[in-house]
Length: 496
Image (cartoon, rainbow, N blue to C red; front, side):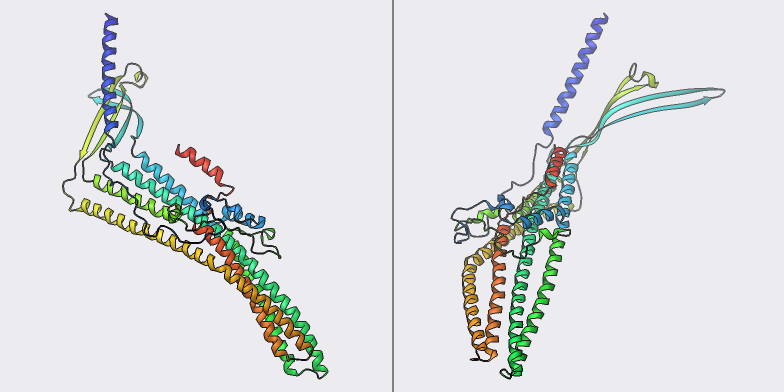
């Protein structure tokens, strides 16, 4: 009899557990089975299909976005400076922290799709008195359950999760864009130092040459061969060169301070360009002719705009779901006993199941206005996405256009430097021989000096154009600092 009774109770328990299992399975199947978000379609590109450029660097294209920055910036000192900036730049640090914040917000939003399970235990003792007698009663209860778990029947929670996820992705693209811009800015500031060093060297060489000429002119003046006018003319040229040297020293010091600011810490002297550095420390990335504009779709700024657009798309789904009823479940199960010692022995099983439903009836048009706002916001993001592509296209087109003509400028300027140098030598020789006055030699010297300085500026522009091409095509966005590997490993563990 005891065995039969036990078997019947066991069968009842199995049946009860089976029903509960079927109920929970049905809830999980229904949860999120409808998604009211519109199907996402990427907007058409608002720019032409290719740049129509000539080949740059080579006839075969490289995937510049995946090109390691060390293969573009080849100078060891420049590489150390860029690596130092990746570890210390404050803008990049803020961008990294924003990613951590967005990741945490996504995990919070994702957690709302699952029930929150809590355990609670209570014990009460009470004393009652009736006349001359009194009694003490006690009870204990332990239960496990979840509170206010919303069934995501119409995808509101899922769309809110997707919206947060796309926001997280957009934040990550902001960080990539910051990293890309940082590398280009560090390289540009480093090249500026090279430029000022070369301009300072030219000014110092010019001053040394003019001082010799001034000494010769002064000797001629003392002997009555030259006039005081000749001496004063050369002296004004010497004073002008001295002023240029002071100016270039000031500009050089400010350029070094600017580099320190961008890097985020004091740049060691052995990281700075050596005195004999030139502009050949930046390799020109290979870009094929008639480059396809679809390469811009992977540009960080364009991807940021697209993830923002996807976020708005999911927000429409959440706004639509608000028109439908929401169902929440509160349930718990446990044991209760008259005393704590018997809670897990002779206790009575207790449970509760309290579903609730909320149906929007009247809200003065709030839900409709919210939906309209979400749709308008999506249209705004569509326009911003198209603008991001147009801006990226314009940046690349301008850099390629400058690339196609800058070599012609360089060749012409180099020829000008050579011809003005010959003219200066001839004019100086004629002055020393007394054939011409010093005004002709002075004019020739100033022409030569200006041509040299302009050539240095043009060389800086050409080298900066290499950096710009690498940047505007997405290069350097995935550059890694010395801290990134450990950070990525931690993030993977936290997201898994």
